[in-house]
Image 1 (cartoon, chains in turn blue, cyan, orange):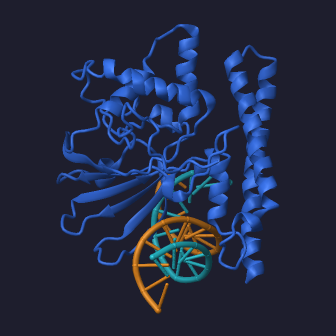
Image 2 (cartoon, rainbow, N blue to C red):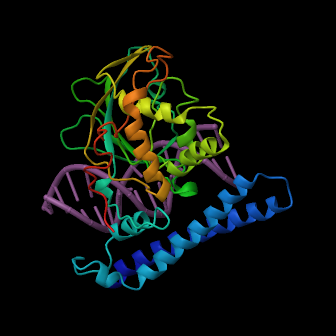
Length: 317
DNA sequence: AAAATTTGACCCCT
DNA sequence: AGGGGTCAAATTTT
């Protein structure tokens, strides 16, 4: 039994490592192919960064694997618990800074969608992200099964975002969707601008991409497109508890305290401070503009101006 | 052929 | 023990 469990974990580790290294290799290839070309400095830097990231993550896993036994003192008799992998993954999730995030500490929030008669359910439930269903389960006391979905790009990009969809007992037209984790995939930066009315995520973890954009635009002096305002809006206009969208109602219900995940890099901290302190002033800007762009699900609105990172439960070192 | 879904087995927690 | 979440093989869809 012990052997089994350990074996399994080991297999997962190997798999994880394999993915990381493969990813790194792919980035290296890309970089190589760009060397001769006129590609931007930025894009090359980005690739280099990705490569280093892969190395770092891999090394961290390998280093950890040697001490699994000590690391999990209360593993239940058997080898490293499955959560270990998660912890490790999260631990290394931002280069340089150690952050351990357990599954539980991932941001989590709920959205309710009421389907109007005649509306195609799939369409109504679409939030702009692409999801892959990985399970369905009958839940005690629920008439309808619960669907489990994860981000389509989990494998390709390691995006950990997840959602559960539960059709309501009493009101079969109502769906409760629980989101967990923030999209770190490439979708994260696109969804929202492409999809008019839907979910915008002020991801903290989508970090790299967004921050890079912001940073880049600041560096260049081109304040072309105001990502910050965008984020602000999302942060500061939490949401009406009920929103009327064309034919269906979407309401965001509750965001949990679990705002654990912050892929905090050195400059992301600065950035969020900036965001947090800046908001007071710009908050009132054109609410009137496109009603079509509404920050919907933001687990983050509750980091008040005072303590952007106040109650994070997810930080360890 | 590849991507997505279905579904029973399996794992972890209470 | 049993409930909820996830895995992964089989199956379906694209």
